Length: 434
Ligand SMILES: Cc1cc2nc3c(=O)[nH]c(=O)nc-3n(C[C@H](O)[C@H](O)[C@H](O)COP(=O)(O)OP(=O)(O)OC[C@H]3O[C@@H](n4cnc5c(N)ncnc54)[C@H](O)[C@@H]3O)c2cc1C
Image (cartoon, rainbow, N blue to C red; front, side, top):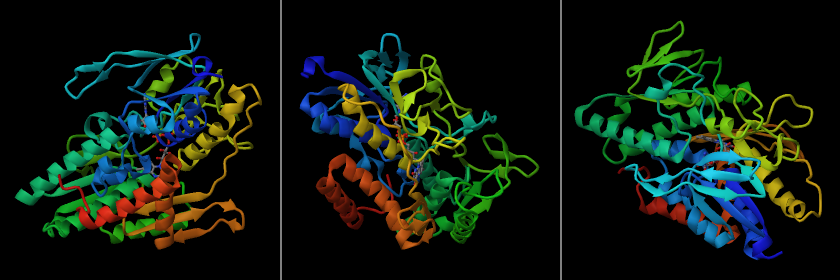
């Protein structure tokens, strides 16, 4: 098969699932001229989403961790098309990418149409505001790089004002899931580290509150983990409130059901997860649930179109014998990308049928910044579940990212990047100061 008659694979979304898939297919098919692979993303670079909370807090530098799509594509045998998916035409097997604009609203690239033989949708998820009044107008989200950067910008402004005038910094985070918990801990770490740059009194001027509607934080973890994490957060100075049902967000803070309002100058909405609203406009593809995820078959194909696959957070995959879809995790996104990468080449060449995807649960982790981490082990091999904490859980959490990095760059380059990150901790400030 030559470049001219090779199959066109378009992947929309270069996150955990899409970037790993594009890299694998680029290496195995694209660089050998066996397929033409295009990755579309609204951002210019790839970032490991589970670190967005630390970029929002400023305890990690997003710029240093970003992998520019153009360079990565050029080195791995695929093309990159910048922009946001705007329209899908299933009968023409074509997508339209919206015009690309700069920060001033000037059009840099006009709308583009891309033809495909296979389309893979991997556009991730966003927090769900459940239609609660005021959330869209008054709250920060940290679902994308741009939102994490915006929060960090506003946070630094508040810190500067507080240092100058002594004004208190009140942060309230809604959502006691992993995102809210990890953000709260990273904010404490930021304030602690700023103490080392002469802002010792910032600790007394900062109040961080975590509001959860349910009876406990981290509902996806066992109760023992929730309890330990809650105590650890409280020891770090975070005020944790459960059964705190937010009814309205305002300029001043949050109004709660059956409780006094919570005042906050910085408000973050990190509750609930749903697929981005765009999925509902994708030429009548079937949506599975209220979280508007795309329903997929056992082979990860969307139910109404076998040429369109959906992976990761935007897909609703129901494991065999289960009524509920897989949760939105990087672990599931990675395994689905790996599965599709192994199946697509032979299927496209007409050599075999697609095999069903099987999910292996290796456990779950939550990191409290540099302080500690907690996790549960899945049931696999000789592990029959269990609980880890402290250094071993922190190391496991780090390994999630480092193994993703190795999958993108290869073992040696991935290792070198790890080393560079470690070394830059000695020579660069531990938090973002500008
Ligand atoms: C703070 C935080 C901490 C987390 N911690 C963990 C953890 O410890 N362990 C774990 O397993 N999971 C964790 N998660 C969840 C994990 O990040 C997601 O499950 C995972 O990133 C999903 O991968 P994905 O490829 O489906 O989507 P993403 O990685 O979100 O990628 C989606 C991509 O699509 C692009 N995109 C979106 N819309 C469009 C569009 N219309 N057009 C073009 N491009 C588009 C985005 O720019 C992005 O690059 C965490 C999430 C957050 C927010």
